[in-house]
Image (cartoon, rainbow, N blue to C red; front, side):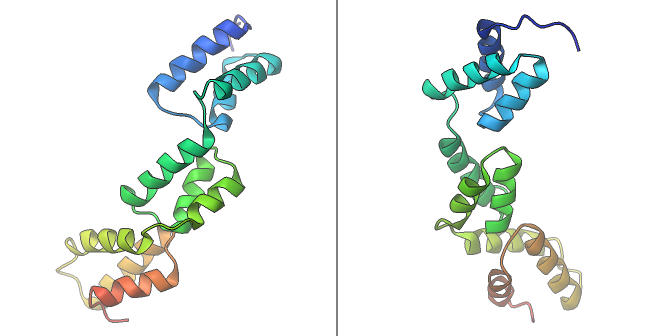
Length: 156
């Protein structure tokens, strides 16, 4: 690792550059700054400043990530929870966000409909198995998976 000028100004400049690419959680930014070689005191001071000035806001970021996870990535509650935790959101905040009122069933249905378009040539047992596996991997509940298969007329 190369020598880094361990000053608040340089840490802040680097942090703002990193935030220019995409939003980061407090945990992600701590890893970035520490990995760059800044001391613990400089990292802590930089994080406090970034949070005070609202450059880093884990609650806001969690909301954005949750919406992305449900609407674009088609994750269920468990998938959302895991995704938020991987992105550095605190476990309790991730769990609260994942348990909030979301259209997980709608996301599951969209995902399954999209997948079914490529499985028209397969038998019903294979279709059911593949859909069930896909929905399970994305973190949907057993009840949600059953409802989706019923709505799509896939025999259980």
